[in-house]
Length: 85
Image (cartoon, rainbow, N blue to C red; front, side, top):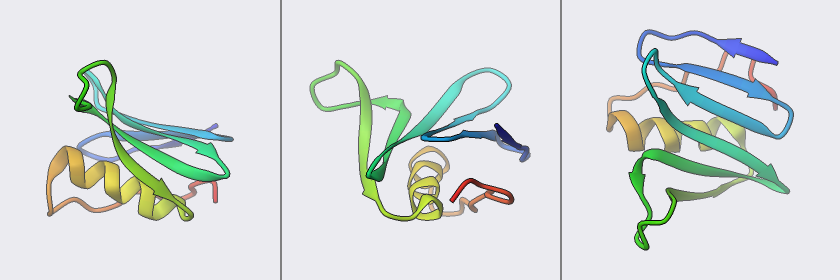
């Protein structure tokens, strides 16, 4: 497991799954099934029965950026030093 610390949240990376959380809540996650599937845990999906799906990505950096943009807005920076590729 790789633990990445940032001021606004932490990415915890393991093979096939990554989670973004701050000290109080789960913010989003990635799941790898051929591609990285990104989820925003701060918003419900349209059917209101799960997390909002952000899309699939070939690159983990792009997937993390999508989660961070959904959670923090356009000024978000990807915090991926040491991320599993």
